[in-house]
Image 1 (cartoon, rainbow, N blue to C red):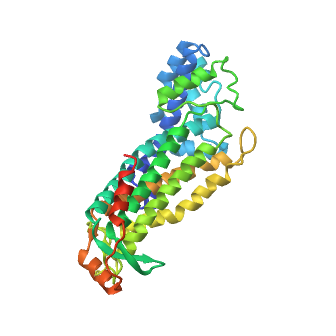
Image 2 (spheres, rainbow, N blue to C red):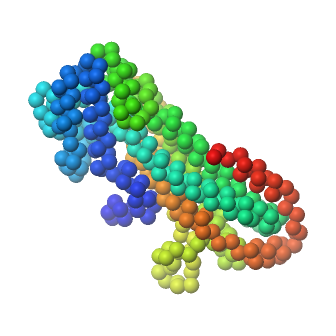
Image 3 (cartoon, rainbow, N blue to C red):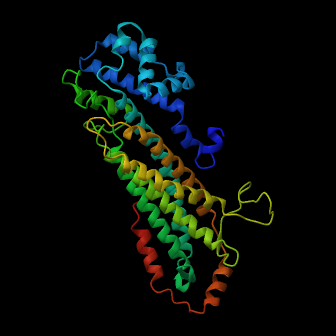
Length: 380
């Protein structure tokens, strides 16, 4: 199975590109260029050496397949990458590449650059889901439907209240992710043991310049403090779970015999290879598959938090692929559910029929007011 056959059904093409080999190499090269410029600005290396590094580093000249083979042997991407960059730049300037930095500085910073890009993509589709659900909730605020508890008919509820709860849950999860990324997607620059040795006492200033150049926040070295990575991963897991709740409810409402809501018709989606009459909730399937996979991935990040002393063996090395997988799953879920929410088909006759069959009246309590309270308190 090729990577695209495995990845594309679960993730958007744009999100896949954020974490692909070329993006990873480009970010790593950007780290080294930013480091050289900042060190020259603060007298750690000569300006002419930095200029040669800036001119000589070219990510397009690096073959991802060959680099991957070397990284598999070295145990980290940075070791073979830095060797290639030093050879590419050559001379005294080549020896100044990566001055004072360490492999984990590169890996963590590359990951946070990808987190920033991935967050922007995910936030856009997440807001589409939230806004579409909120609009649907307002449209159906006064529509009485049968509420269900423990999968059985219960008491009346506004059909819009389900949708408003889903909109608010999505909004809450997006806000948690916004906060986690804002607080923790920061430059890592600590050197061999997190002391910024070899930077002539200018490490903090160099880090600040690099962070500004790369579009990241600055922070004291966090190489052995993995709370930030775990926080971002946990927020992604919560978002994927919130989207999964939407998918579960729409799929249940679309069942034969209920038929109160269904996904919009989309060419090429929802059919069956064997049963032409079926209209499968395939968008919901994408989101529910993501929600099934996400908890284990989040658990991996939590399990890696007790990292040994100044640099862990196997802990932080596990985080990058896991965080990438969470963003990939979240992207596929949000993109699929945005289409579902924006085109959701609500069968008003089926809603009325099911409510009448339950014979519990039409008293929705304070549903419309609760809907207003939920939607009015969303973040933006």
